Image (cartoon, rainbow, N blue to C red):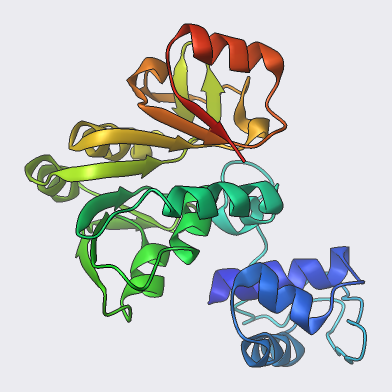
Length: 264
């Protein structure tokens, strides 16, 4: 909830044409929830002076109260809430397509990351699934879904990525098996898949080794990008789902490597 409010607060400043309905559709919540979030911002404030949404009056101080719980994304490094707003249309298309690959009684692993988060929003509610996860947002969103069994690998909570990490987390993942993993990345290069945080590497690589089919969800902006921490070779992927903005050079390279590619 805090991450959504933070993102909505930024949208109110950066996108003055957004309506309540636009925000509800963007964050996959009801219009009533958006109204409550805006009321929260009114009462607690946030650092940027907001621009009112059409038909809405938003009163917020130019500077936040000392105890305001609306946080501003870090200027560097990975922040889930900030990343969630980037290339959101492409991520939603990728996530929606990925959800169509599921079959009844699939056991799947959902990785951290905003594109996987979009897939989670599109999970079908008419087939039974088991979801293995190590992230707060997946647990928070899916716990009320009666068709989904959840296995949570917990540990130390990293607020920046909304993920859990621990030795016990890794040992549990080693003992589990999944039919599919939907993995995310901060960068795709010929040398491999990279992420921004070293603490994610062991969890990601262990989860990959526990899965029969490995599916990468990455919008085209991630290709050609290198981050600090390598977690898997590109050739390990059984399928990549990206968007139609992917360059012809990358399409050709993936074809040469015999990695199935779906563009949406």
